[in-house]
Length: 338
Ligand code: GN1
Ligand code: MG
Image (cartoon, rainbow, N blue to C red):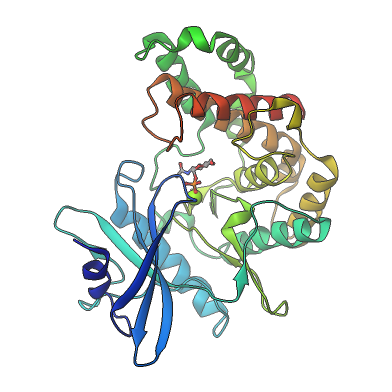
């Protein structure tokens, strides 16, 4: 099916006159489409869900529907993610081959950032994720599906890593033995959050700053996007992932390790921003583990990248052979700087 044919199944103002693929995400396939109605044009995001990563994409959509409806009801009139229904009165499209497509209005006049360039932006970004968790704090976590089993179960990733090392199915172990040994030495860290008896909340699970849209009109609140992985989880994984990704001096693809460390000034501003909205609902135990959470999630992602490298790059999209090994080394170096 063409993009125009897929778009035609949604209730849009007119036919697609332009589409372009957006390739910044590592998981889903995303298009920005432009629809024409009379003399006006309006843009939308059309996206299909990667069913290898999300084995039950219907459940992903039910979660997103639940969360966007909840936030929408809370802040009527405030711009936020809203699913465009299909003509058959459903909020997403399931094709006969089970591929799922969804459509959102393109949030115009907003800006997103891949890198934080000021302490003020750090504060506002972290406050936005804290506020997102707060808004969902009155939804029962058990009403949401766990769409990726054990998504932030670090010990489970560690076990899969050990299995990948044992199997060495692509003969790559020899090229990363030291990295593997370092990960093994960090085993104790993998269970530090899960063993602490922290409360289950509804969390975002992909708290990169690029997942926040800042309206040009600064009186409007920031909008948290990419709700695929919203599910029950620990608040601290969101927090840790935010610091890991936003306070690193280099991005995940940097291969010059000398450029990579945790920027403590940025980390402090992020912490203050997060606590400005989250302090009211976090327990003392959660607050005490904030610093450790950054280490745990960084180790977790390193383990995931290295496991994927050992298994032949089946999960994360790569741009060149060895990309996942480089990403793993990047994260391990970041961890060592904490
Ligand atoms: C994946 O596709 P993207 O960039 O939103 C991954 C995250 C990782 C991230 C690392 C569902 O997110 O967990 O932190 O890559 N998402 C999934 O760049 O596995
Ligand atoms: Mg994502």
